[in-house]
Amino acid sequence: MAKLIHIFVGGESFADKTIKKYSHAGNDDIVHVAGIIFGRTLEALATKDEGDLYPGTWLHRKDKYFNNPNARFIMVDVPDLAAGMDVASGLLGTPYGYSDCLKTAIFEETGTQLPDSDATTMCAEDWVRIDRGAGLPVLPDIEPGNISPVRFYRALINDHGGIDVTHLFRNKGVA
Ligand SMILES: [Ca+2]
Image: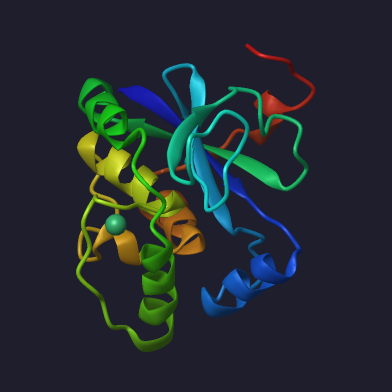
């Protein structure tokens, strides 16, 4: 089995606290998901990071979150990494899904799922799509654009044997 590293990131800004409230994060300090693939950090961001052409899904430096005290690294085994990489490759350059982000709030508050597509994506949606592409049936009854970061985190830990390997990414430069 190949392994994929997911990065779940917390925060305390007003927006972070709003996300945690509607996603029922409780004590889980999680508002964002990224992950390591192609030797880089793949993530969808609502605002441009350095080098991004517009808000969306891009590759950032591999060590971006290594020593971030609000980041935890979760490793899962996936059956078909090459297929997951195909999905990830197709997601690069996808515009950020602001409406996808709203969908997670609506789903968490009402249980209603809204139709989703990969025309725009948000952070958890990208990694749910990559994991599913890699053969991991993450939250199969929920459209990816409706899945909040903390719901995704709990599914990896509770349903897919996700292991916290944060200690491997502390006090390190680029591997
Ligand atoms: Ca979407």
